[in-house]
Amino acid sequence: MSVKNLVMLSGAGTDFRQHYEDITMTIDLEVPAWIRSAGPAINRAYDAAVAEQIAQGAPTYMSIARSLGISLYLVTAAAKRQNLRPTGDRPKVDPLNHPRVNLERVRTLRQSGMHFDDIARELCVSPYVLRTVLRRATAITGEEFDLPEQDPLNHPKIDLDRVRELRKAGMSIVNVAHELHVCAPVLRQVMEGARAITGETFPRMVDPLNHRKINWAKALELRNAGTTFAEIARHFNVSKPTLLKVLEQACAVTGETLVRTVRPRDPLNHPKIDMEKVRELRRVGVTWADMAPQFNVSASWLYTIAARARAITGETFERPMHPTRSLNNTELNRVRKLRKAGKPTKEIAAKLNVLPNRLYRTLARVRAETGEDLRGRLPIEESEVDLVRVRKLLKAGMTYTQIASEFGIPRHRLRLILKRVTLRTGERFDRPGS
Image (cartoon, rainbow, N blue to C red; front, side, top):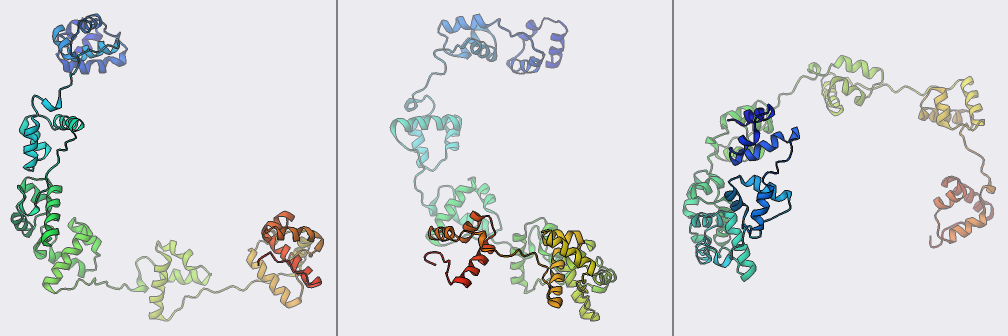
């Protein structure tokens, strides 16, 4: 009977307990998880029997399950519900006298260079059991079951002549390790030790002209067609460093040079940039940065194409600089009124619908032509600051910025007031040590 049918029968009123006690432990693990969402009553039929077995001194959960003829899941569930535990559950084994792990045998195998996984297979135990026993034995005796220092030139499993032969055949370290039935880190460690003694690097010899992934003729064709190395690497499904290494070796053999042949495009007939539209936009004063997004290119590339077109046609594509328009009398009178009202330059520019920097240039031009200063400078009054307090603050080591904030005025205005006092009286307001 399948589990799904069993659950369906239990929902239909069939004697679920009779079926439940007849199925295997696997069903005991699966059914409760499936029917838990339906909220059935907890099966406490075995609680008393399990408690009685534990009271009688049953050593393990498994012995209770065998005694009652039920699954281990039901026994552990009943014991946990009652917060009970067999007194002799999982007795600890003396690691120095383990029935299956002979430490003398382990020492001998470790001295021969075997790893823990190989020793575990030799002793017919799991690697976890072996490591647990050795860890407990180390805690008692302090003995470390480390591999002995081995001569990399005479490794029991790794024949360096064979490694040299396989590497010359073009095999990777992982494939060589698989061929020698060792793990790659062990092989690398032995090769590093051998290199430290003999200086041999065991290079991997790969014929660049007959690479298993990179076709030299195709790569040369793509490169001459103007393809980048990154695109060629994607074409052969290899990394760019691998491609460059193979191509460099191939060039050393054949004498070829992989110079990318880039066919220059006609700037007057660019596929993205319409030069007629560029001229129109430049005539109305559009900058390169504002124009580039319209052609879906960068500003630098747009400028490069325009420079190439200029080399052919001589056209400069200069952007006309519109002169700053002068303010008429009505606007000047409005500026004067707003200045008298204490309005700043930026607010005046917003009311005149011009940019602040353009208004600054316009007022500078008016000042140069008529001598009238329409800048919003307030008259400098020495009474704005207490000179006695300024002297004390300077002696205390405060900066001009801190002193200006004490009086609630800008730093430059404080400096102008102190400069006027210095010109009038000759007194200097310098900080101590400056």
